[in-house]
Amino acid sequence: MVFLPWIALGAFGFVLIVQLYFYLRYFRLLAFHKTSTDQHLREHPVSVIICARDEADEIEANLLGVLAQSYRSTHEIVIVNDNSQDDTKYLLDGLYKDFKQLHIVELKQEAVHIPGKKFPLSVGIKSAKHELLLLTDADCIPTSEHWIKKMQNGFSEGIEIVLGYGGYKKAKGILNKIIRFDTFHTALQYLSFALAGQPYMGVGRNLAYKKQLFFKQKGFASHHHLPGGDDDLFINGCANGLNTAVVVDKDAFTLSTPAKNWSTWVAQKERHNATGKFYKLKDRVVLGIYMVTHILFYPALVCAFYFLPMTWVLPALLLKLLVQGVVFYKAMHKLDEKDLFPYYILWDLWMILYYTYFMSSLWKKPKTQWS
Image 1: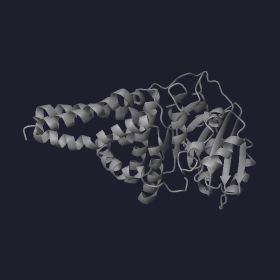
Image 2 (image 1 turned 90 degrees about the vertical axis):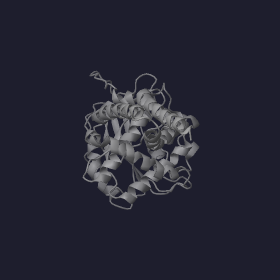
Image 3 (image 1 turned 135 degrees about the horizontal axis):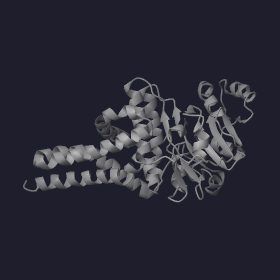
Image 4 (image 1 turned 120 degrees about the vertical axis):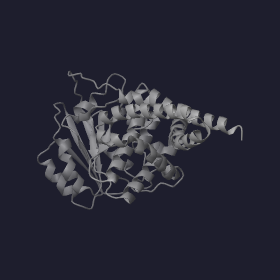
């Protein structure tokens, strides 16, 4: 029993130091990132790629935000209508009359042994006329008319990938806040790691890369059998510290329609999380360390309070909450999620339940539908 205080000290000290390391080494980079104020933007030709399947309502609500972009250079909006059975075709035909930059690709057959949206997305990319590809979803709308301009400006010399932020529309209710915090927390990780020169994923709601890179990687060939991964696994396979840039500008975000009920959201998260086990080993190890120490921090804190002097434990806890609070505050303002900040300690506790529940996604067989 004489060793228990030392064990408690070692366990608490270890998880505290690791968590502080992630916040000070990585997450502060997004929190204190300075958005470029360069007003002399070079506008490159861009192909925006959107895949849609039975999403006529979403297209009607969101596509005008993409079509009405203030972008003087050559650009096109490629919509891949993937075997839709609703009014998507008629809606797109009607929009084409007013927006000639709309390029409609009709798919009338399913791809055998290629689940998810990788086949329609590949068709859209192959149909694109321009080298710079900007990807989003049918249920997404840009936050401003300068979305294309801001995102393509990330392509400086040597850059082949530009990562953006795809948030969710604000609504009433705890589920909406949970979805938006989960999205923020994910972005805090992948954008911060990219800023540190260690990119490991991106999200298809707001992502840009070069067409040449897609073909150099042979598209999605390495994971074509999986329903997910058209965004994160693709980026995980080809991103590095030299070819990847980040655009964090409120005019360059997209907003998606969040799930309306818990079961839909849980199914989405399980499907998306299932691709994590296919990341590069070094990325899985680093993210795993962050996840495990996050889960263990509060159990270790309870043990520390029981076995160690309060004068040791309380300052350490306050230091962690202070560092975390400053990073969350700055990063949430940066990503326009500032209404979530007052609950940041509760979100920290929530993530323990989140990680514990969704850990099973690492070994569950992924479902075949796409969204």
